[in-house]
Length: 149
Image (cartoon, rainbow, N blue to C red; front, side, top):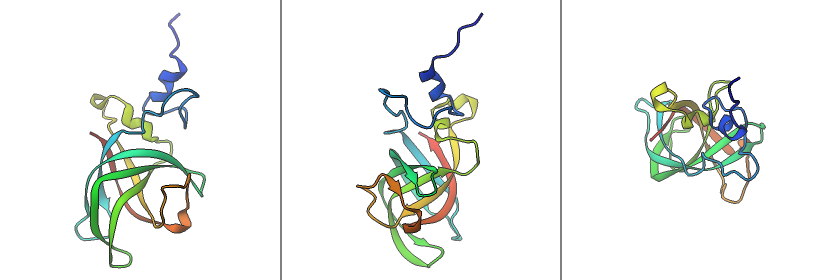
């Protein structure tokens, strides 16, 4: 009989079987570089983001798991809903389609799994000392793609 994959291997598979790193293992998504491409943000010309780094996982007040990304440099853009200018330094990502996990970014790019369709949220408060993404104090503003770089 063939050997069974180890649990730590299962965790890194693109579909992702676990939501958090097993005890004693570092989260491989933390420190991972991504390029976020806005597909729809309500503006005639979607905002162009610089690359960013996943800096941590957050539990949302809706109990979903979000990933906080710090952009390599701030981006000034217009928020379509309010027509006001705002500066984006960090955004939270949530996979857009059910059953898809951010761990998919860890899969082999030649298999075509080097991206995830995401919802993009901007916390409207200082999130640095919070372990929870408060969605009542955050703005969902775009759909896009997070791609490994």
